[in-house]
Length: 112
Length: 114
Image (cartoon, rainbow over all chains, first blue to last red):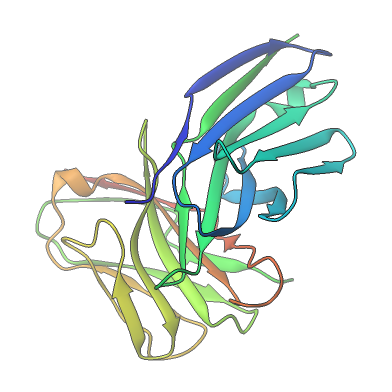
């Protein structure tokens, strides 16, 4: 079945770049997303990429998609303490039933 | 303000006492969904609804019921809660086919079943 996998934890120093990785199994994915969850809050969309794109850049965020390896990454440049949160990778697939599939989430801790 | 509203935000209850978590959205979204979030397991879908009177099971539907009588509301019902339903619950909505199908999430409802 469909699956989305992420590592659980990442720790970086303030000012460094963070790279959060995700692998997925469904080749019929249409969109892939990164959602951010701050403590005590719901998830908010950070960015997304359409499945026919390889890269998307949005200010400090760079999303890379390798469709051959089914690998998605999120790079945060100049990481700040305010970036500390849980980051969820997700995909939607329209094969059969419309469905969102989320990864386990990666907890990013930024050290001052 | 466009939003998804869940209530209650926090609830402590006892095994077997029926409860309902409400979810309401003001964006005229067709699609609504319930998730539970548990440490190390990410978000798992409980139930979803493609439109009024159309609901379907997600990955972990056991012990839960839903209804979709109106477009804006999608309550989650626990008929006889058990301790393994202690979790953080999120409701979310979107309009399928409207561009990137971005989900809007509620703030979450933390449920403890003793």
